[in-house]
Amino acid sequence: MAATLSPRLLPSGDSAITVEFSRNIDDAANQRVLALDRALQEAPIQGVTETVPTYRSLLVHYDPCQIDFVTLGEKLRAAAGRPVSSEAKTRRWRFPVAYGGENGIDLEDVAKTLGTTAEDVVRRHAAGQYRVAMIGFTPGWSYLSGLEKFLHMPRRHDPRLLTPPGTVAIGGVQTGIQCLAGPSGWHLLGRTPVRTYQLHRDPTFLLEPGDHVTLFAIDAKTFAEQDRAAEAGEIIAELIAA
Amino acid sequence: MSRLIVASIGPASSVQDGGRHGAQRYGLTPSGAMDRLALAAANCLVGNALLAAAIEIGPFGAAFTARDGAVRVGLAGAPRSADIAGRAVVIDTSMTIADGETLTLGFARGAANGGTKAAAFSYLAIEGGIAGEAVFGSLAVNARAGLGSPYPRPLQAGDEFHVKAASGAAEWRIELPAAVSGPIRVVLGPQDDEFSDAFKTLFLDSEWKISATSDRMGYRLEGPVIRHLHGHNIVSDGTVDGSIQVPGNGAPIVLMPDRGTSGGYPKIATVITADFGRFAQIPAGTGFRFKAVSMTEAQAETRKFAELLRSLPDRLRGIESFDLNIEALHGANVAGSAVSAVDAETWHATPADVLTLD
Image (cartoon, rainbow over all chains, first blue to last red; front, side, top):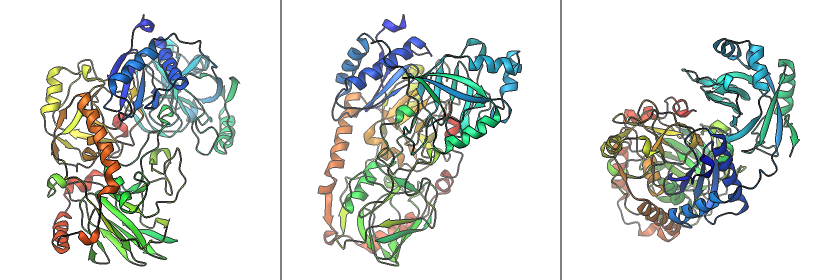
């Protein structure tokens, strides 16, 4: 079982270590990544400057003038081997999503490819219990684990150079919320007015790796209204439990 | 208060500093100077904090005019012609631009005639620093995230900086160690086990060139095709400056300060910290090689590099003792201003975004 194995310590140059728990998208591995991340926040190691959780590994940036690879590696292995405390203070969010139409231009095609209706895809996608597995690529781009198998599908052959801010999409076994406009190879199902990243707002970043997220459908008109409110700095997402 | 006005400037020029650290866990890349040593040298010349914000100038020419008073600046990095109102000035020195005068910089000396000193980026530090609103402790431009101050985008003609009036302090030159040549050193990993020994050897034994389609996100490499053992899709994991990832087409991309914080291609090796600036300065089209070193050697070199940065203030020399023939030097710089076509194309190309996306 992956959860009991010692992680691999992979050098990412002379100033970072990748602590790898699995090579695959693996829920147990992601839990261990987030647990180690938490452990390092609670008991910092001198010389560690920044940690970056991903699906399957924790990237630990450090200052080699303060600690060397071997010493840090031993400390990380020890921290990863300690029993995981029960998942402390999980935050649960509800995000509105306007599915289909101009907000989700791939919804009909996805339904066709999966041999079902657009309504069914929306119902299934919005019913998911998701967890923020990692945030990466661009600011606020939140990768959610927990997509039901029926909705797994390969990424597009032809990535789009520009997709809209707030896009909610599926790609491979993942779903995600992208905050900024940018390139994407995923299938676009809808858009959320929620800004997971917004400068000059407190907090600048809404989601933390490990947060739980559920979605609910809204219509295009509501989206437009909430999008304006969000632009003005309002946090549209509901925090149901902290 | 004086003003420094950007009279003209090429692409790939922006305000950069030591970078924006602490928010990679939210997908926010650090950005920051391509060549930290040159940034630090420029700042040191005018008494600023070493990694304070300065103007990073790409391979093209640029001109800056002082208004409402004199402006004192430090210039370091790529060799290129430089003059103030027609009087030649020298790289790696401080200088004062009198009210109404213009500092004019030529093209960076490119691959065509550069030799080991060829480089792409210069740094212009302004005495007293650049005023702006820091986000996560940094003014560095990250155009994609809309960050950077005073302008959250590359610089354009007409932009201006409100700056401290020149102090009138004596000018300095900074004595930097001789330019290092030789291969760019890397530490193998984190995913070198995704490549056969034969392809790792090919990677280390081949001559590479920086492609003309490179930018602050990534430098694409031209050379032999590097094949993966198990395909090119891995589950995204974290990246660092200098991560060398190999996408499906087998052409490696070295991730630069505006990189995505995570990436889904196997990373065969990582450029060591001490060589990153030197790598970033390699002009497009110039041949170079990689060399694998041990972690122990890489970390020893990083410590030496940190020591070099700390030593910069001790490397300042009075300009009076600057015993050289400025005219001859200027002549040499002018010769270097004939930039090669491949340099000129570099900064117009498709962003590396598309090749590095998830």
